[in-house]
Each structure stands twice: as structure tokens, then as C-alpha cells.
Length: 172
Image (cartoon, rainbow, N blue to C red; front, side):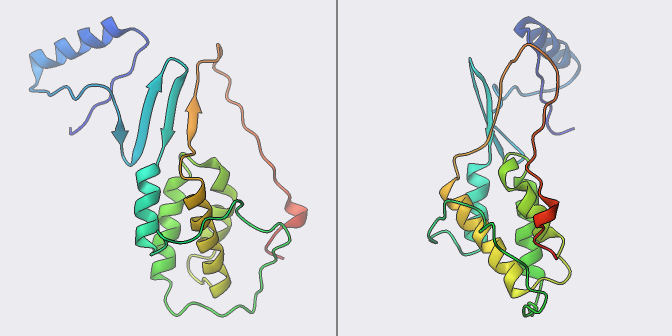
């Protein structure tokens, strides 16, 4: 085993677990969790904040869009996909970037819907689809500090919100 993350509400139980593990295995305590699998984690008295700031910077570098101008919103709500748009000569770059965007949705639920849309064209992307991916990257550049805040709320209910509009689907 490489890494083990321990989390408990009681610090004494974590200390006891570490002590028992040290008796059985050679372990190294790296302290509080700060970064794991490309996700930055920060703890405060209000809760946990998870984001992928460094991951977005690396993604922008990979796409050669680090110095691009940011945009404030993901898409024009009047956008319609053109089925006659020119196909991309090679879909490798498109697939690589969209794959990374899919992983980014872990901490950026605001891009999940549009990333789901562009991922539907992984095997036959067009110039228009690549334009949408570039727009997502420009949006990320302008909103790179965003992430997910997990707070203690006194219950264990899972809540979800959506703004689905199948009647105004981009793929007609």
C-alpha cells in the first residue's frame, strides 16, 4: 500500500490508530492532508475546501491556453450545434483535454453539464466542439479559484440541484 488517509472526528482515535499501525508496519506520518490525486484540500473551522487550482493551470498549459483571455460564462444560451461542422483531422488532442475536464468535474460541478455534452463527441469531434472545449478552458482560467466547500450541517442528507433544460437541448 502506498498511501492511507485517516479521518475521524476524534483526534485521540486517530492517534491510537497511528500508534497501532506503527507497531505493525514501518509508516511515515505526513501530517494533515493538503493535496491528494490532484485535489487541493484546505481545512478550517467552517469545513473543508477542495479545489484543483494547480490541475487547471496544468490543463491550460497542456492546451496551450495559459495566456488566453478569460470569459465570464461557459456558453451562449442560444448556441446550437451544427451537424455540418468540419470534423477534426485528429481527435487525440480533443480526447486528452476532454478526459482531463471530466476529472476536473470532481471539484467543479459548474462545468459538469457542458463537459458531459462535449464528451459525447469523443470519437467524432468537429471544429465547433473544439471551440466549445476552448470556451470551457477560458472560463476555467477566469474562475480558477472555485471549488467545493464541505461544511458540517447537522444531518447526513445528500442534496442535489440541477438546471436541466431538455427542451432547449444543444443537440437537435
